[in-house]
Image (cartoon, rainbow, N blue to C red):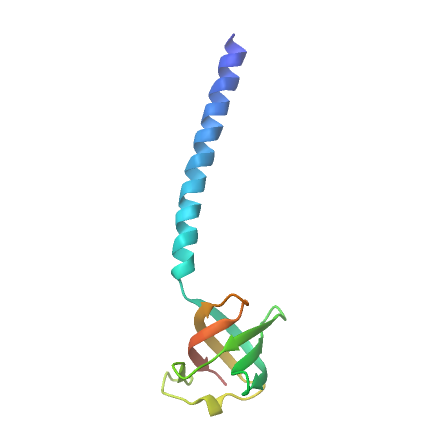
Length: 113
């Protein structure tokens, strides 16, 4: 009798903890969808026809960054820059949102040396 009570108590506590852990995670997932994302690394290739920049990250992963007319560019000192300032081998930090093809649509691109 005492043992079944202990098992029942453990089961109830386990379920309560599971539900408590799941609630913040689902709320955080919704918040995360609205958050801006970031890609930083070295420019590997620029394709002006498709308005994409291929960036190689520190983990040696290639990411696609899409730029458009509304993308803002800054230099190392946070001064305005232009798309033409981005060259192969330069480091950039792009901030924006992921599209359905897991490409980052950049709102801002910061160009580093």
